[in-house]
Structure formats: C-alpha cells, structure tokens
Length: 100
Image (cartoon, rainbow, N blue to C red):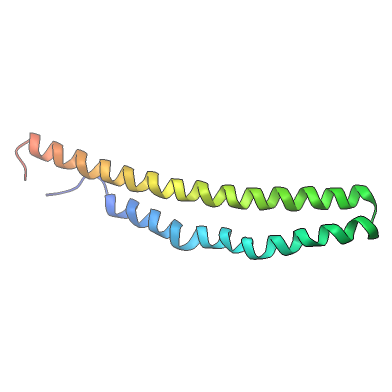
C-alpha cells in the first residue's frame, strides 16, 4: 500500500530529538549546580546587585534547561502519537476504499 504520509520520518524525528537534543539540555545538570555554588562567595566579593543578578540568572537558566528538556520529551511523545495517527488514518482510508 502506498502511504500518503511519511510516518517513519516523523518517528525518526522524535527519536533524533531524544538522542541529540535532550542530552545536551540535560548535560547542563552537571554544570549549573557548580555555578550556583559560586553564589555564596559573590555576596562577599562583589556588590549586592551584581551578586543578586548572578543568583537570579543561574536559577533562571537552571529552571529553563529543565523545562526545555521536558518540553522536548513531550514533543517526542506528540510526534510519536501523530505518526501513529497518520498510520491509522492511512490504514482506515485504504480499508474504506478496498485496499489492504
């Protein structure tokens, strides 16, 4: 049967996101805690506004990286579901029009 949609391409796209994007975002889990540890020393060596800005920036980046990784995981799930819907729709159409 000839497929109208390339569901395998969509599945591979999701797998590529899992393999290539999420690990990069999760790799920051090793670096960001070290950067956060610098906070304590900053409050005694630089001005309070600079130290506060640094603390806020590292906290924001930490939260953003975790959130982005979760969004990409959800995107992979959505892509997999979309590919399955494509396959199911193609199969139902083929069946309705006398295909296999």
